[in-house]
Amino acid sequence: MKTNLNLRLFSPHLLSILTILTTGHLLSGSVLIDDDFEEYAAGGPPTSPWTSSSNITVSSNVNAQSTFGPSGDTQGMRSRNLNGSFTPEASVEIDSSGESYSILKIQFDYMFVTQQGNPQFILEGDNGTNGIRMMLTTTNGYVSVREGNSFNELTGGMSLSANNWYRFTQSIDIGSSTFSLTVEEFGGTTVTTPDLSFENSISNPTEAVFNYNAPISSTGGEYFIDNVFIETIPEPGSASLYLGVMSVIVVTFLRRRNHR
Ligand SMILES: [Ca+2]
Image 1 (spheres, protein in one colour):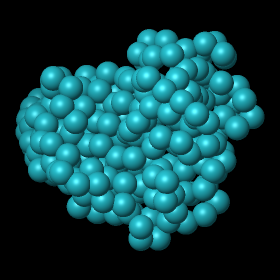
Image 2 (cartoon, protein in one colour):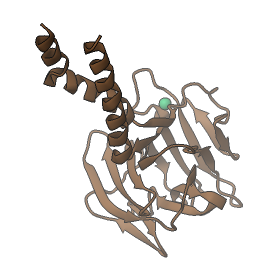
Image 3 (cartoon, rainbow, N blue to C red):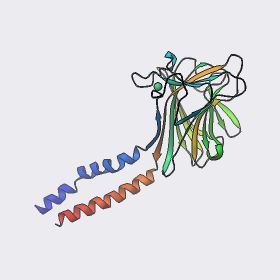
Image 4 (cartoon, protein in one colour):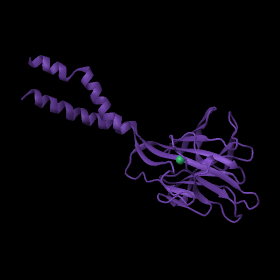
């Protein structure tokens, strides 16, 4: 009977289950921001964790109903470029301190209504340094990424059109200052551009910023953001180490149990 018990406890099935249990949690990462803007009062600015300037409001306008969002999702964050002397800006803090991760995932849904002054996303590092900077739509209708000293329009495969939702997903490697960008058009095509470069290297991401590249006073621009999701993906190495430690603990436990 003793031999049969040992075989059962160390069976491949048991080890498989333990592997899933011990690595599944780690590999899911930590969600830092998950915001669909449904919890804020319509017509006012988005409140904590957001910081915003004038002309940033949470809107229940029908155009703000993201088709990517959950059922019943009716609000988004509206940014209007109207004043000519400043660019509207909304930002949210990214606190990844104490986390060991290899990839930072940043996802949001975007729709522009009128394209005046290019809507812009920035991932800032310490001291407000621009790490990633991209124009979400240029006057040519493309996404344009600031790589080092130059803007590079991503003309391959997709031009963006007004009043249509797009899901932007960035898979970011802070250590190598590179990222991939996937742009999914709702009901349309999906284009992934790998190996994009940062504007500047940063050691630590601190804020995600939505603004414009230039102020506009005449006709103005308008866009919406919804479903902002920021997550850390842990390093494979740390997951393996964790699994190794858990295995030792489990094996020790089983041995003691068998020797009782
Ligand atoms: Ca929403």
